[in-house]
Structures are given as C-alpha cells and as structure tokens.
Length: 203
Ligand SMILES: [Zn+2]
Image (cartoon, rainbow, N blue to C red; front, side, top):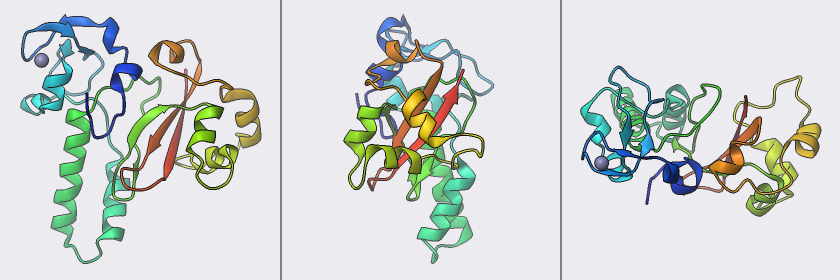
C-alpha cells in the first residue's frame, strides 16, 4: 500500500477492522471508513485501491484539508521565477492530490494538513519520545520535538513539561494504541528533506 502523503495507513487508520463494501468497486473488503470525509457527497467506505486510483475526484468528497495558504507561500519562495498562475496551478494540483488520494487521519480537532519545502508533508506516525530520538539527525530528540511544532508552541504551553509529562515514553505503534490516549502528537516529514513537523491534538 503506497500513498504519497501517508506512510503505513494499514497501521494508523484502523483499516483492518473495517470490512465494508467499497462505494466505487462494490467489492467487500478492508476499506477506509468514509463517514467522516468532507464534501457534499456522502459515502460509507472506499477501498485502498480506489482511493489511490483517485476515484474520489469523481465526486465531491475529500479526506482532509491541506494548508493551502502555507503551501502557496512556500511555492512562491521556492520558485520566484514562476508566474502567479503557475504557482496557483501547482498549488491546486498538489492540494487535490493530497485531499483526494490520502487515507483519512482520525483526529479530534479540525486542523490543516501541514506542508514543508513546497509540498504537503507525509504523515509518519504518532509522536513518542523514542520516535523523536530515532528521527533526530542533529541534536537530541527533545530538541527536535520542541522545534517541530507547526505553528510554534502556544505561549501557555510548557515545552519541557510536554516532553516530560505528556509525550508518551513508549512508542505509539498503531491506531489501537492511539485510541487509548487523550493527547496525540501527529508527526509528519517533508517529502524532500529531514524536516519534521508536529501537530498536537487534544480530545
Ligand atoms: Zn474499491
């Protein structure tokens, strides 16, 4: 199973527990639960093959919201020679690919899918101390964690406290693990560099 913006969806989306009839190919198999998808057209389920093939483009349904303003800004910086129309086309192209072909991430709050280096990031797992230690290429896992927040840490949040008391000490392996927590850290990676982006979500 290979998705540009989502690593190992079989681990992180509860796919295995959801046997249903795919809205598009009508086959009964492990499907993504589509009831929480956005858009005017409501469907119940879509299988990984149909999602990857872009079948959602046929109807008004999408799995997430990309940070389109952030992406447009980044693309302008990276391609100062491109016209506004070209930037817009690239922005819409990448956003459509993200929102129409990416497995659904189950979240409590509605937040926008982060971008880095002129493209949307790839979701790689739920944050934990061991995960950040493993991802840290320069410096410590703790430093990486604190530097990775997408919109910076809110003023009233104590980063030291988050690392020590809130961030899990053990790996959060899968969807099952994550569903037992009331605070989750979603970890994303740039498609082209080692940049890590974290989004905190509270139930
Ligand atoms: Zn299907």
